[in-house]
Length: 114
Length: 113
Image 1 (tube, each protein chain N blue to C red):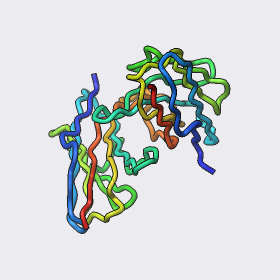
Image 2 (spheres, one colour):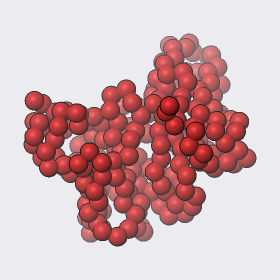
Image 3 (spheres, each protein chain N blue to C red):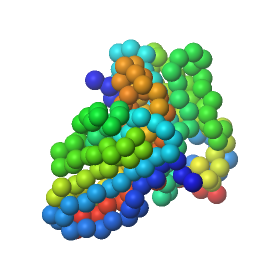
Image 4 (cartoon, each protein chain N blue to C red):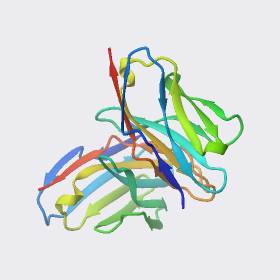
């Protein structure tokens, strides 16, 4: 089984709808991240969490919120989806505290907002 | 502020040819540097990383990268490309004291038979 899973893998929704993307991990890592990937822009950090009680904004958090329900689960919500949130969304985890280390990525969720 | 530049958006090579993907970073202290690969329809997988020590780093799938402080570069190389290497490649940089990475915009590699 995959260490980092994301659901759904694909989602098409309409403008104004609330959407939740879910991420689960079995790696036992404390650190979890949400990124979005757009063609030509690479990966940009939306939110990150160091533990259940520690949530931090990334560089593009506007229009998004997150919930860390447990060490293993980190959800991303779009409160009112808009077309420019159409993108590929990745969840990632890492283990080491205090310094950058390998991040382990899920397979991604492709979101289309019409 | 940290930044990463991948100057080449798209590279095409023939199978069996050598490959070099460029990555330049901007950071005052010694950076933590990574190369990831994203195959079509998949998430990112770590190829290799550099924190300190030997500036030539070996990774998986026959890739290597060399850290050159004087040029602020961390270029990825492979002596002989295989068709299965067709993918998008991302360079990333991090700083001691943070748990975040800054990713480049990616280089898409196309391999012709």
